[in-house]
Length: 313
Ligand SMILES: Cc1cc2nc3c(=O)[nH]c(=O)nc-3n(C[C@H](O)[C@H](O)[C@H](O)COP(=O)(O)O)c2cc1C
Image (cartoon, rainbow, N blue to C red; front, top):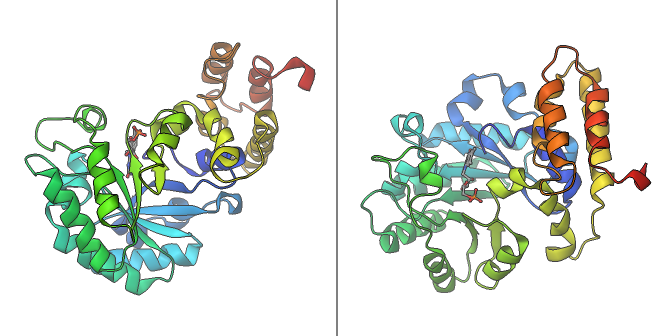
């Protein structure tokens, strides 16, 4: 997610779940080809398994960008067919590609030919006046013919005319049933459902119908729920939140020692402890002090004192 799932955010999320697949922010193929690659693509070794999400609609550029991403060590390349922003539409990628399934099929075919890691697609169910019953199937089938096996479906249309990107994440109604039907008709494909899933209980219900669940906002608004994911869905050990936060605090200290600034490093922590005693003080302390020049690990330690169990100290 743009402006959220940067490398520090993923390191925190990985401390909370060993098994969930993590995704980068969307990076355009052109940025990968012509931009500051090290800044755009570097990630911490602990983040695996991690997918790079690419945006674009020029097959050769996407193929070249996918190859570069594979060389960087990503585990999967995901193509964005869901982002509704104007900037994205003018560049002819994101959600508006729901109207061009053949082009998207060509893109993923070129990407698959360029890499040995999985190429996946994140899409909407349609845009504007499209009939989602038709547009979702057309998009998925065009990509499946090209060999894509995994689709994450944000189960609502994007209205490119008249709604802001923010409104497009909440206003068009969710249609989970359509996603379930498409899965039933195509049992050989892995279909992940996304959109409006706020708890692991809800995720569990979806998993009766589809192969996976993708969490968006819940993952950063309430990262603690990730601590339940391994035990609940992957047969893994329960994760101790304080221990995970300590792992992340040590990462923060290392990043600071290498010249990093505190504020972007604590941003992914702001949703931690939400609803728990001390959470507001924790957030306020970080918001007020982490921006200051030279803010160090002490600011984080002080903030944690508001929320961590006293007997754990
Ligand atoms: C701040 C923000 C940034 C997002 N950036 C991306 C992105 O880069 N790529 C993408 O596929 N979806 C992006 N999305 C959409 C989410 O992945 C997700 O599809 C959407 O928020 C619905 O899921 P949710 O209700 O679980 O949040 C973004 C959403 C938000 C709120």
